[in-house]
Amino acid sequence: MSWQAYVDDHLLCDIEGQHLTSAAIVGHDGSVWAQSEGFPAFKPEEITAIMKDFDEPGTLAPTGLFLGGTKYMVIQGEPGVVIRGKKGTGGVTVKKTGMCLIIGIYDEPMTPGQCNMVVERLGDYLIEQGF
Image (cartoon, rainbow, N blue to C red; front, top):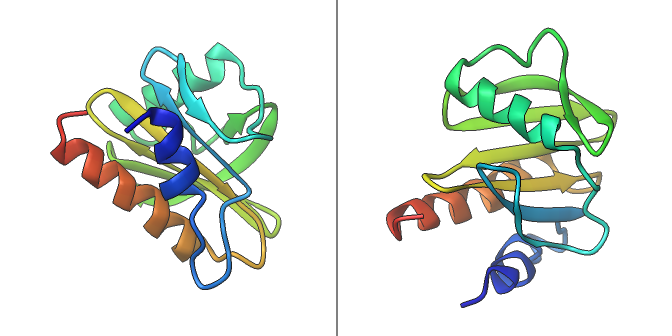
């Protein structure tokens, strides 16, 4: 299966009639493996900051998580595993695997829990597959 198929078929799937606004699979080095149409063009330093927070949980909390210039307030996650952010009626979930980051962005009416489930389920599967 291609990386783009993971984005199109798994991250952008319908969950109770809702789906992510955009999604991507990005290497730890910031290289884009696959992304949906409309995924924000991010800066390398934004991915570097996310990676640093996985290594040193809590580093993003004071400044927020930036993705494509959009600032998300960091909310509860799992240190070293998942970072969750909120902005207005939407937010972002970032799951780290051994080789990549699974990033999902949502807006209402999708709920944070639905976004978390979609992103983290694919992340867990890729971890099991050695990615």
